[in-house]
Length: 78
Image (cartoon, rainbow, N blue to C red; front, side, top):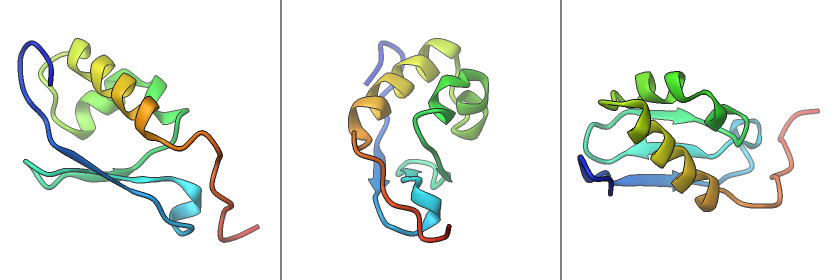
């Protein structure tokens, strides 16, 4: 939840997807694979989920940083 809007995201963890969690916006159905490094690109995050501002993208990045696992998943392929 931000000052401007409320968001509902699901985060799916699996050993597939090259170790990246699948992030799904429950309101729009938009989904993507992200990792902690991807969360640093706020413009990309803003475009992916059609967020109205970089402030919202920053708040989403902060939330997802806390939601993502601290220990990286082992990737399926080497």
